[in-house]
Amino acid sequence: MKRRILALVFVLVMMVTLMAGCGNSANNNNDNDGAETYTFKLSCPDTEGGLTYLVATEFANKVSELTDGNVTIEIYGGSSLGTTTEVLEGMSAGVADVLVESVGTLAPFTELANIDAMPYIYSGYDHFNSVWSSELGDEIRTAVGEASNFKLMGTCYRGARVVTATYEMKTIEDFKGFKLRAPGLDMYVKTWEWLGASPTPLPITDVYTAIQQKTVEGQENAIIDSMNFSFDELCKYFILTNHVYSANTVVMDLALFNSLPAEYQAAIEEAAEYACNIGSQTILDKEEEAKAELVANGITIVEVDNAAFCDAFNGFAEECFPALADWANAIRAMDA
Image (cartoon, rainbow, N blue to C red; front, top):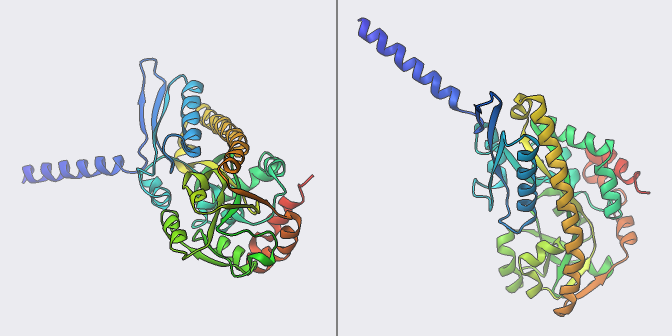
């Protein structure tokens, strides 16, 4: 009987130990000086050379510097830990501890994250930057984070989204009936329906073939992303609609972040801001280089009347996304 009782106690102890090991993947130890050390897994969709990988690298290096090497960030690029959705849903269980992605990817957790893809709420990069470096930007990051149980840190400019097409378009009327691939998010689909276009949600990996087969006549994305996917081989017109200015951010599980010592929290936030600033400047520089390269390769850059397009979206937020209307108007009001 005693042996059975001892065996049962042993099994219970093992179960408790295993359960305690579940959760975030961060490894927490003490170094020889008694300082707490951590190792975190960071996931990003890009491989080396991409924007999120650059931000991840700068972030990891800066965190190590600010914590005297006591916090280590291990980078897993190319979505090797899973898709963005899988990582976000599994972060509390230890799939990853940190993610570099757009604010909009948190839309499944809170509607406010859709503000990231709201069309024509920014007049340009300076307006975008002034919003996200202000109290309003802090308020948006905090509200999205608290509603989704994540900590959002820093804001990185991803580049204005433009349209690449197989034929030239300049006016709003030209977009009527235009068949384009749009991301499979309600905000993007309704944006193009509002203009009278015919959006088709497709995975980004299927778009090149879809354009080849004339299933769609183009797509929309940031200039550099469009070139990375070689859409310039098929779409000879890059139309500078600049309809969305999207933001990347450093995302961390909120409970994990709050569990860290205050000095490490401060270091991680500072590192995220630092890395995102480098990412923003890199994209700004590359956008101008990319335009010159496109023109040299025979691509036609089409300027449009952005003010007219902006006016065409009056009432869009109120009708299609009423919960975001006040936020959208607050952002517009900050345009100098």
